[in-house]
Length: 118
Image (cartoon, one colour):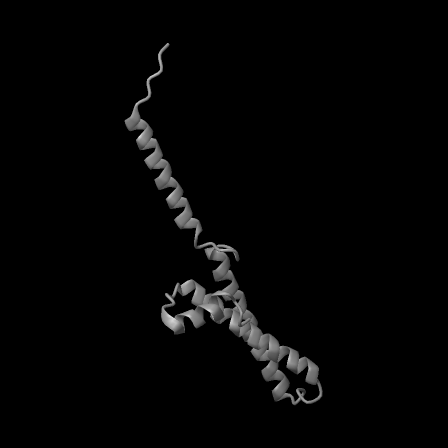
């Protein structure tokens, strides 16, 4: 019959929508482009396992003196070891949520947050 719009309920609905959208934005802002929080932990765990495995392979090659005969395999494992170690460091820094302040913070952000070092 007649239309009556309560301004207080409209303001309350708008305020609730703002709170909901800001809550969603703040919770999803940590996810980033490279996955969620648990994905980053999984990357760190896999990186640690890869680092240990490559270190063992390199140790075994040096101990058996095969690093001189299998030079390309030795170099590939050395590069993979360095890459795995840098991935562990990069994702650990991302998980720690370090605040990068100043010039040093800028360069650390460029190196670690952009994954440029890997």
